[in-house]
Amino acid sequence: MVDERVKTSNISIRLPDEYRKRLQLQADKRGVSFNAHLVRILEIHLMNSGFGPTSITSANTDRLFEIRSELAHDNVDETVWAFFVEEPKFEKERAYYLLGLGRTVIRDWKVKDKPTAAKEVGLALLSYYNKKGLEIDRLSWSQFSDDGRRVLQASEVPDTMEEFLAKLMDQTWKDEFVELTEKSQDIRRGRSESALYR
Image (cartoon, rainbow, N blue to C red; front, side, top):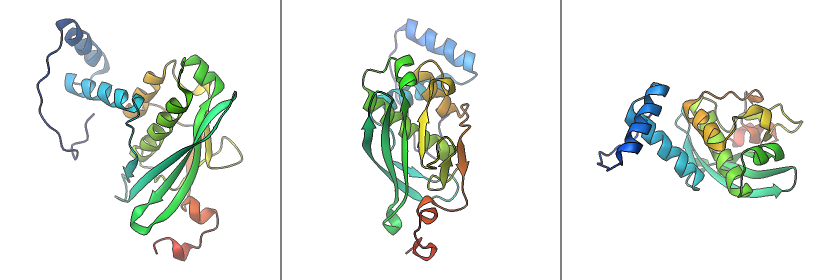
């Protein structure tokens, strides 16, 4: 569903009848409008094409976070990216998360470009947590002993990456490991609280 606060434009597109009918059937099955269904398909395509969001505005506090990322490791067991959550207003890094895909997810999804897929899923996860009302500098996961690490496994996700991204956008997926902590990760890891907004 398109956020009403987002500026929109009216455009006219020409679709083959076969595509229009198929899209309308899918929209009806999901109980959404044709337009909302088409926008969701475009969002999924943009994420899969490397255009996932690199900045996130908090759904609760309107704080702006910039997301910087770099490949942490890519081996036989998992492909993981490091995501640095920075708050430009105060020039502070608030959190550092390791998000990625386990070997069986990569195999089951038939992923050809592991680093790109893992990066896009990581960005999609951060957007999903934000839409769920979780402040993204206060996330923690109980999956591993390190609270800043989350690696998706095959038992947690649908059969395809497209289905998973659609569930994140619809907010119908549930992360059993995520927790919202009382303090931002940088405070939990030793930054003085007085330095939070300085």
